[in-house]
Image (tube, rainbow, N blue to C red; front, side, top):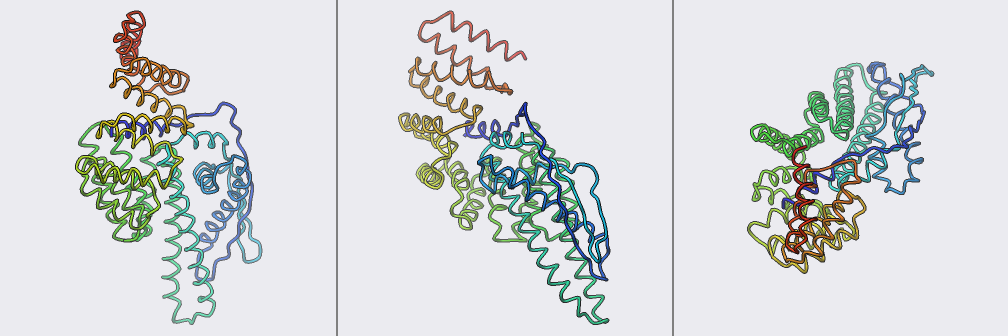
Length: 428
């Protein structure tokens, strides 16, 4: 399980691309408020439509990247910046907004290097906000059509309804902006915006879910135990609220299950993953994490879940590395573990995770006293990590383990060199 969590942490590292280009997109959007709405609302909605129209242009441009449409949507929605100030003009009864967006195409490279589970969560968040805005637009359209024929005595009722629909819209905007900060790792800023979203609309389940998700990440990354526990409690509280507001919110159940999983409350985690799987039976990640929760108590159920995850997503290397770790650590079935690590190596495209898979297989070979194969795998892992921009702590330990393998085969010179390198890295 430690190797699995290490992959999650390593995969979240961001990298930069030297020859990146800022691509710009300019578009307009319009909105016309009724007599009982403020023009400020029309300006905000017109700007939002201008941004969405510019993002449609960007989506067409970034299709050449070869990524799936939903991935492109997540990248541009979270990665754009507004250039300069938006321009506004009155066109008849309409407020027209014009905006220019800039998107760094290094976002593509950064996205490819992100962890698979993180990418899955980001695409879900992008799809969710798009649905929220679409639903709000439909409600606004219906409300405006009904307001055209309102009677004088109904004005107060309509004003209250417009206020609710517009607050819902503004709340969704806060969620979308919070998602952008979370995408960049600016978690405190994200939480602030999610909290503002909840203040605007206390029934916004997405705001609770996203805030809980960020607290969960903060808990996992926090080394001070009391602080981590505080974040974990806040995450659970938010995700509990999200599931109460929407009992069919599969992602919120899965996110809460993940919090329980990280806290080693496996029984509670299994209940949440059961519900998430019931709602979304084709989501391979929920099977992977339920499998991890079953590991301490029921190896057969764990293996069944690992197998199901691979059946659903046979081209994802993370699925194989997770099952390989289970075969090695829990079942001591080294041949099947080696086969899974090898499959993960063949499928993995990201060098930092490829290095981890070589290390995993090297550990397996070392355990079986197959020192030559272990040395080869450790060497490959070191080469991959050394040429990356990140030098994770595990690099030092790979040198040490390779040194032990050299020592076991009687190669004192290489063994001492690796032990010396280990000491140097530990002192940094």
